[in-house]
Length: 324
Image (cartoon, rainbow, N blue to C red; front, side, top):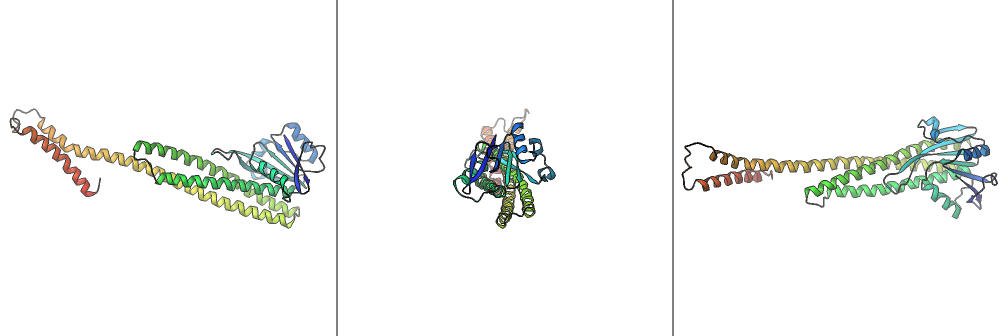
């Protein structure tokens, strides 16, 4: 599928026929392109459209390069970011003179919101480079929204960890299991955004080099610098969130360990408390012919009293020492 856009009164306007408007098109967006669509774009611009396999290469030389006068830039972008399982896939931006070509195989939100905004208002996106910088700014804004939502969710997880609402150990164990799952999901989101920001950092540096080589306007160069600073600030923030996620993971494991230790402590105390009564009962349960208290009238109450007393004394001692 190919979405083509032309400039009309400083606004982007979608057109249906690429070939009929080939001279005025400034942006062609390829979504899951077929071989025929790739050939159409290659014939129109005279550059090779990268395949999906080429886009997924991780080498810098395969993601950022110049070929036939066109600048090829590939970044990893998330889609389906409303859930905690974003779809990560590469998107290639091809800046060929005054035209921009984008190649993608998923649907990042910025590719929906940016054309809608550029069609309704004059955003200054009249050429390939200004469209690219505007699209990158929309992508960075979306990543910032993702991090803001993740930050709020992490704060909620933190409160759940340190402010346990249940008094039942079994219920707290289930809560901790859910918390571990939530922490893992947030780590996946943070990791995905971090990968995307790293690729955008490299892309922004390459784009800045391209702006110097192609003599773009001062305003475009200034926006590229601002974009680089924004990406760097988001990278710092995602690093902070990752550190906090690691702390929450350690804290959750520590709370689980405390719960387990408390349970073991109860069993240990119970064993110590009932050990002296067991000893008394064992002594009077021995099968000897001569036991002084065997024929004694108060032998049974005496033995019971001994067992109760031997259980109470260790309990009081533990309470006095602060072990209970």
